[in-house]
Length: 259
Image (cartoon, rainbow, N blue to C red):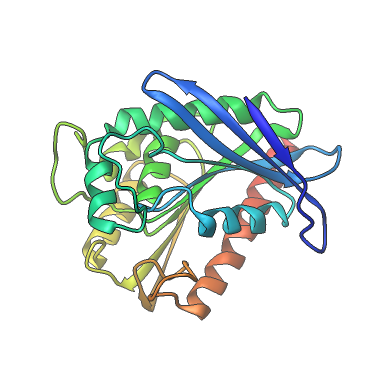
């Protein structure tokens, strides 16, 4: 099921489409935006923060699409039990997230990956993923479990969970062996959830497995520094991370095109 609209973004016209994917647990909405033309593009599967698919994530999707990418942003919490009415209720959203199996989140993203691969708009060998905060960790696990993912950008995704539970059976770092693509990790220097020790452990793990990766930590930035709608937005770090991200995507998409 899909619906479309054609907002004008100034430089290049973008086309927005909403898909509804039938999943075992319910219906998964997917916001898709891409340049409004007949060309094919590399694609991004964009994974939201704990707050779900909100206006900020749609704005990030449009910015990526404005850089000549096709973007698929699912709402992974759409059918979560116990979802609070107010998506800005951090404790309520964390509670909803904690009740979802990581396997389900990975599987839902694999369904979005299949949707992107089937599109005439998408270069099927150049589909990568990026995520923020909780979404960074989910994008990481998804990339490690999906060999055809072309690249991964992880903005301050948790490396270790606070607790291992029936729904979160392994820490994100424990998926690292399966990573089959280049990774860019962008972290904050002031972050209680992701310490320097955690980042060093991730680097060591990726090195030991012989993975291709680059990790950058912004010493003066706090967790969620990229989100310009929240209090910890750090303009310089966000700007640098954005340029690094676009260069990384372009470079890896070009390499894929040359193969």
